[in-house]
Image (cartoon, rainbow, N blue to C red; front, side, top):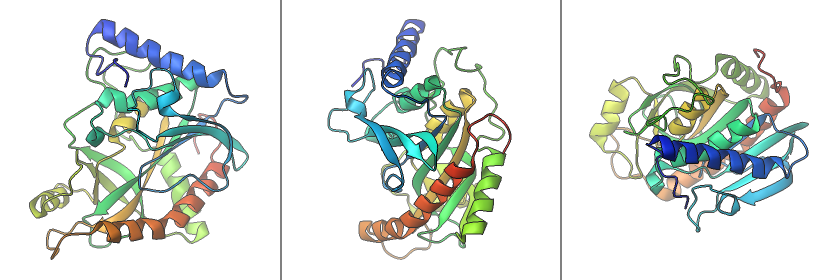
Length: 290
């Protein structure tokens, strides 16, 4: 695992930035076309799109400076999907696996250095909303960060973004509108609302789920938010779709089982793949509004 750590000093921040740039150079020198769109496929949310024609593939642990433990199976692929060159990060890092916020952000920083303009995230979440059911797809419109960590803590790299980036709309309104349009056209039920990010990895208590709902969130999960903060810091346009794995009701009788969650995710995967492929086909790889 990289020793860059949280990069909380100016010297460590310079090292962190250099490591990110060297990892991006590693990829840039091995691909023919620069991808402008990235898919960040959260663990357990869904495998890579079947239509992806992989041109290059690396285990993150084999790439320079990436802060990945040797037994991790995270991979980065570059290939073609729906006629576009895309980068696919399968198995992003997570805080609940023991990585720091800066380490979790490292692959996103690297993709930003490669020149990507759009990032589509997927993750797995539980529903605290009575109308959001297991196996639904859920379009994230905003989030509440209760993870107790932020990847921007420490010295700021001005070339990446401002010290205090605006987070009024972390999830791009144009991309959200396009996702809703595509889902409607393709007959995919796409729920939407607010994502509550907790540290995990344990599931919540009944009191915690009641708090999540009281605070205005609709689903709860343990992923994505650190990467979204970093992506917006670098002015990348973000879309996030959650797969609902279970109902996190404060009135639930009995524990949720792993088998139930796995079944819900497996049911949702074909819908998620289809939605992502159609979105990639339609989103122009430019900074213009969609």
